[in-house]
Image (cartoon, rainbow, N blue to C red; front, side, top):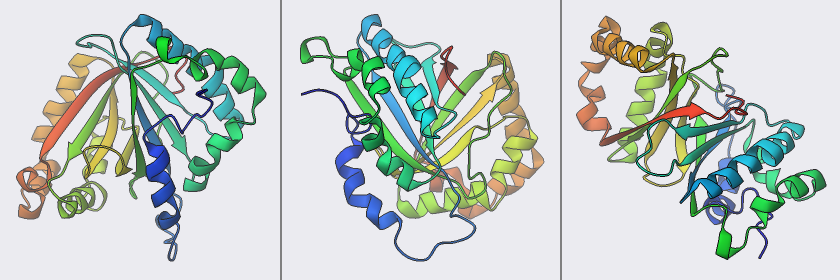
Length: 264
């Protein structure tokens, strides 16, 4: 069977089919209707050959085809200090859930995409392009409804996942970011956040993801030190309902560097 599908190869296919119609039900909220959706995709790779196949696919086929469809600012990253073969992480932004839902059928009609991506799309089981793909579909936060791109230049990125013990804890943590001012603190202190998103389909739910960026690891350390000592952060985090012990059960941080062709 050919791997002709850009989205169907991920774990989102079946789950999305069940949940997507529900996301458009009910009345729209003017405050939230322009929030973007993000596909956060992690490729598990066993060797450099697989990494080369996936990277060539994004550079030569996927990103150009997505850009033609109006899907801009696609990010592709590798780990800075992988424990083995680096995973490859792709961030694909969509203006609406309808764009996400229709992208596969549109790509399947793009002959240039199918030709440029043939080595990846049609890789046989005996020489697969990757071991597995882990995907999450995220919805942007109300207080940061779209991507914010950092300035051009050499930078490192930190992708953070906060897992919650319950859905209620997730609601409170998003409230802390959106309404209590935590996102504003990140911006004021120069973290230059790229996105914040709630996971609506994916593993380890309930959780949220966000990405921040720094000049280097020394800047990373200094920024987080400043954050921990910030008076406004101390004020917010001292509120009993916002205690990390109540809201966050696990934090996973991954340090990334953008591929040469990455649009983020």
